[in-house]
Image (cartoon, rainbow, N blue to C red):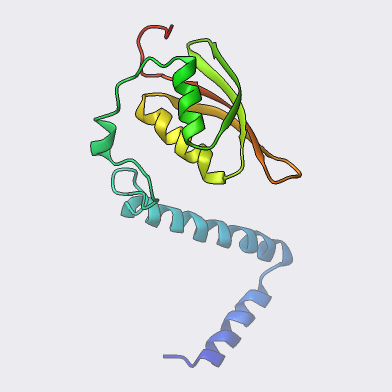
Length: 156
């Protein structure tokens, strides 16, 4: 077995004997080959397969949860308003549009919108579009669209 310094010297000599064009081609090809080999090893090992990868994020839905989604409750303006009030949200707009609800309002606690969205999800309504904006006085304004996608017919 060669000592490391002798091996390095031999490899340097072999590298120096190559033409400049060939050294450039090798300098480009070698990292590409290493990346492709790494990709093949990772893809064949199954480390990142969707079937075996599980989310360890708090609140991530498991497959047992997905089979038991909540039924879609028919909500009216007053139900949205009461839930928002319970969660510390002052609603400024509640409108029913295109089989969904368009809501706008403001709150001071950042967790209020999350709690409100969880309540809506338990009713079968999902926030599909939302926008949050912080004011100068540290209050948060939001607009959100809640839709019950799992319905077969349009929601009144």
